[in-house]
Length: 184
Ligand SMILES: [Zn+2]
Image 1 (cartoon, helix red, strand yellow):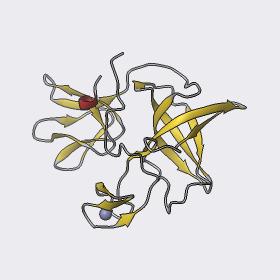
Image 2 (cartoon, rainbow, N blue to C red):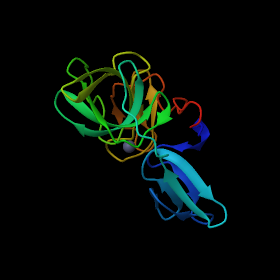
Image 3 (cartoon, helix red, strand yellow):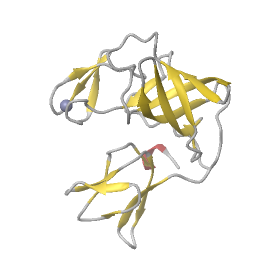
Image 4 (cartoon, rainbow, N blue to C red):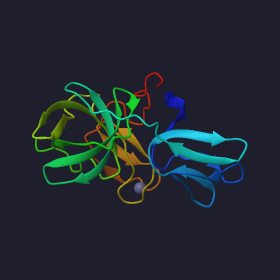
């Protein structure tokens, strides 16, 4: 597994003329797109494109860096379903929470965003993470108004479709897939 074979949610992975939509993908009438983050599998024989997560069960430890998908946004915290631990995929679907109380942004992260967190501790069975350093925070997000792609503009983001300007607690690695390291 490498950064080139990983797709973010909604990413175009093939044209529908070349491939059919398989597991964890959907067809938007023009392109096959990833429905979740994971590894692209392009089966040339069957012409089916799918997204898979290798079956690895693991739980993060203190100081591990996780990549996960925001599943809930509450007033002072977010809940994140963990997809990668130190660059290695996990299917354990363990969740962690991250306090957002001290982050001054209109939207720290939205449900469906991909974030990088550092694990702080486990308290009473709950895993706590932090996004308080420059490489941590949102690494993939979409426009809140139209679902379009966004680009960073100093410390805000701008939609490439409708020009909506918004805020997130951005990682300095926005839209970067280099968090994937090595192979299992
Ligand atoms: Zn937009």
